[in-house]
Length: 89
Image (cartoon, rainbow, N blue to C red; front, side):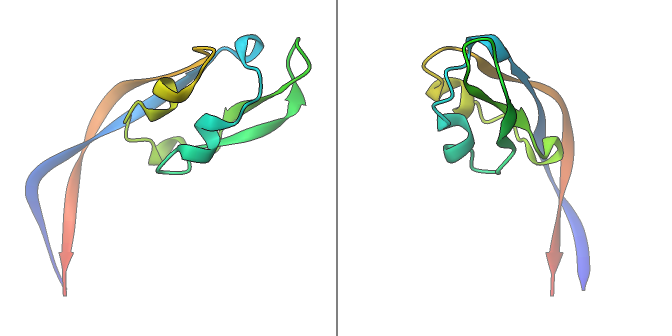
């Protein structure tokens, strides 16, 4: 196998959640392309399950979670970029 860096970089994201603003719709969890979020077993002040981060290393800061959240309770920020390494067989 050969490895090489083609010069591309992938953004790494950080997820921010306002737990008490969430109404538990689950859109952010269901439609995350990298399966970064999961629903918490805890309840917020309104009595809803809110999302929590399951795998932050998979987040590419695509922003889909914040676009889909009707309560504006979730957003992502870019924290760094990592180099993409391709594997050729």
